[in-house]
Image 1 (tube, rainbow, N blue to C red):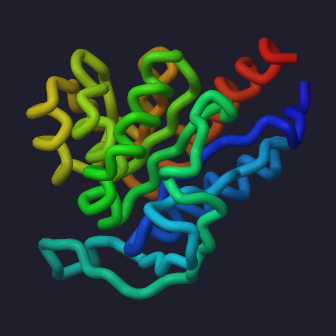
Image 2 (tube, one colour; image 1 turned 90 degrees about the vertical axis):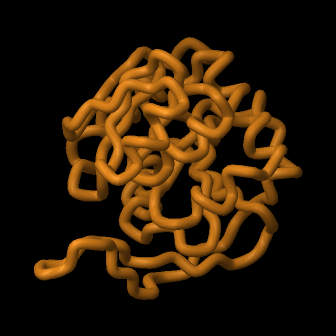
Length: 193
C-alpha cells in the first residue's frame, strides 16, 4: 500500500549534519510516498557536511556538503502529528541533543512505539533522552560509548531492528537499514488509514 502524502515523517538536523545520512532517507521517504519534514533548532538553512575517515587517517575528516532548509524549529513540532522520526548523523547530534523540545519529542516516539530510524552519531540524541536502555542498536563504533553508557546494546551490523527502532552504523549501511525502516512506516500508515 502506498503511503499518503498526509503521512509526514520527521528528519532531525542541525549544522554539520552528514549530507548522505540526511538526503538518502529524505528522498527514500518521498519515493515511498511519505512527506519528509526537516526539523532543527531554528527554522533556517543549515550547512551539511561530508563526514568520513579517509585512508591514512585515524579520525573523521569533514568537508562542507549541500545545505538544507528546516521546515520547522523543534519548538514548533507537535510530535503526535508525525508517523515517525529519523535521527541523522554527522556532528550535529552532539550539539542539538540538549534541546529540551527535541528531548521531549524523542521520548514521545519511543513511548508511542512509532517507527524510528537512526544512523551514526544520531544515536547521541536518543541516548541523551534516556530512550536506549536495553535497546539493541547499530552506530559508528566511536559512538559505542554514548550508547552503552546510556544502557543500550551495541551491535556491529549494517542493520539492527529492535521493535520500532531501526539503525545502521554509517552512510555505508543506508541500503541495508532504510528499507526495513520504510516498511515499518508503511505498516504504521496502513494502521492509521
